Length: 272
Image (cartoon, rainbow, N blue to C red):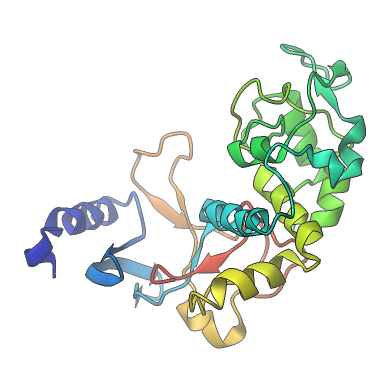
């Protein structure tokens, strides 16, 4: 396949990154329409056990969950369940009393009123004022961590309740900031559909597309295909070689968890 379509350089790059210990494993699948025209894997789904990576190995999808969440939301938009410029407080009244951290302030109690209410469109664009709590860019991030916004024992409902008590990091619409917006969107999907987020995407996306290995956890019958997780030698310097096996960052994926995260909770295969 690769000789016909010329993807040898892609394979060589993946292999080089693996050999230089920037990644523990790598895979690619390239489609021309519905036809697979190239597929390649290198490395191990578990280096210590020397289990080779395969096309049916199961990965943590992390933020690749986000486009799936957005697609699910847009199927409900097609049904007329909401409009993109609807205020999210129309469906989540907890957000009616949101405050905003004053620009440049380092005190989370130093807030101001909303200039405009955040909308569904802004959630999809990560411009709604929310943050993530992962990068500690402002005192709001520290509060996300302290309050356990994305704790795996939370639910989408309890996450929204917690977020409603934390000031926004900036005025909605003013800038882009990577955030929990896709998780809030997951809760909105529950409200619009009358189903749990997991039930909705399984019925409307995974089942029609035969994505049989995509879910919020890996069942015991598939544990032998689940990739181990590796961390970079220096998270601040991604070009520094070296890897080490690390525990899951956001809870145990080998069993169901209460939080069906629309921002990073799914697992699946490259074929899915």
